[in-house]
Length: 297
Image 1 (tube, rainbow, N blue to C red):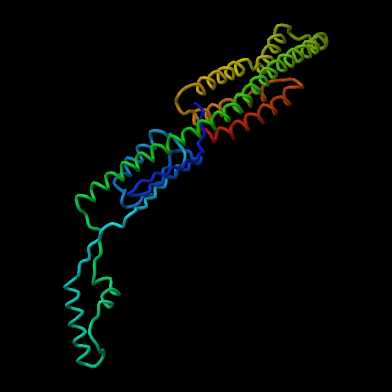
Image 2: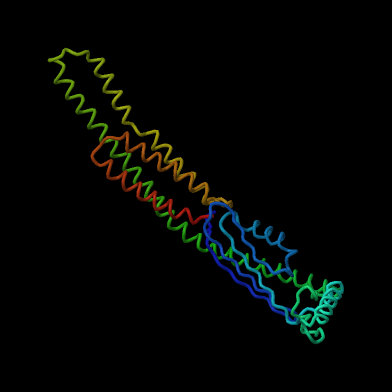
């Protein structure tokens, strides 16, 4: 199946507790490269996020960002570091005795010292229930965003297939023209050789059988029927890959390399005035197809 590697999707879900926003962007990449940005409150579901993406995306760079905005601030607890506070108080007493400082230790002084107070979110049974609900909403938003992304990538893939199918048809027609031009060139070469043999027959008294065999060998070296047959097979394989349900981008890329190799061989073997022109045109179309296939998953 031809599906684009590039796409974008964004989903936002809101309720009385929080807003969950999911944004997914996909770009071309040789393999699956997944980048996840997720808030600490939802960190526990990151393995599930990666699994969900892996089920829908075979390759490409996937950037997924999950944002969480709570309607109510979480409850917190503040803990005094008594050991630090006692040591600080003792040090200040010594400083006062020496006249280095004056005045008592104030609450503001403690707030300015990060070692004095520890502030953390309070975890209760109710909070755990809320976290589970938020995780469930986040999963649902992620799944919806992935579905939207898949729809977009499939739609773009349809456009890619239309373009690639047109070019594949054109290249197949060009290869048939190469085959016809090569046949004409080989026939013309055989005729030139036969004429030249007749001219040399009297002069050199050459062995006609040996000359005939040489003509056959030269004609065989310019025969591209095997390359034509393999290219037709590659064309059939292309259509099978494009029609299958599996991602086919990497396979199509490899197949294009084989198709290009066959065309190069045709150009080096075939004889004829029109062959080179058609070979160049076919290679140009194959290069355009190769550029397009880089966008296929």
